Length: 333
Image (cartoon, rainbow, N blue to C red; front, side, top):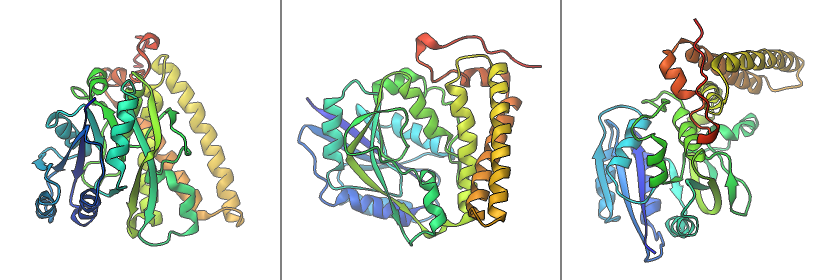
């Protein structure tokens, strides 16, 4: 059985890390002869040395191609990658991810053994450029760490880094024709696209984790600053609102009531943590970062309220298995 995999690498002005990503792929990447694979670099309006870097590695990776996507944003870039490849499986490899030498082989083997899964992902190990401060270790999720043990198993969600997607299932979700959530646009830190992909795929068929597909996620020094973590967590808070809405089976008014109750609980929890921080019993920086997550959550709730009713209706319940979906979305005046 022949397995075809396209490694789609979307990049925006990150030439130095892209070089490391392509170097890792070029160095002794092992694979079974029954696995046919290619690499597609999607240049999303880069103004740095991205084209020169990618062109250099074409001599080391014969199956590497480069394409431009003029619409700014990770989601348009990923769509470009999907539409310009024909492989049965599409792997979204971020431009700051270093694949293990056996990654392609492991991905091909897993895809062959699990043809009915919607997507799978492996271990995402954080590779710190500089040792992080202690408070950073409370927020590994902010850097897409993924570690579900040493045994392959179904999971409820996957991070975007290294997610390998079944093209047939992806087509059935409608995402290619109508993505619902925004993702990173330039330097804006939003992660709704990863959440949407995983949830919509998981609504169709199981998501799987396999420890054999291992990659290192490079974390530059600037990403461990309190300011960066506040920004990324605010974006994750927005994404949580949309993810919860996608899994909601009731009406919008019921979702709003539920969300407001949750928001009040979190305000109380943050206030308690703030008091503990002032008393020296909690890290002030960690409390501030957590508060930014919930500030982003409130922002996402406000966005959901303000959007057009047809947009909101398309999001609510969109990641429920078909038999459970309800067309009961009330529109509040």
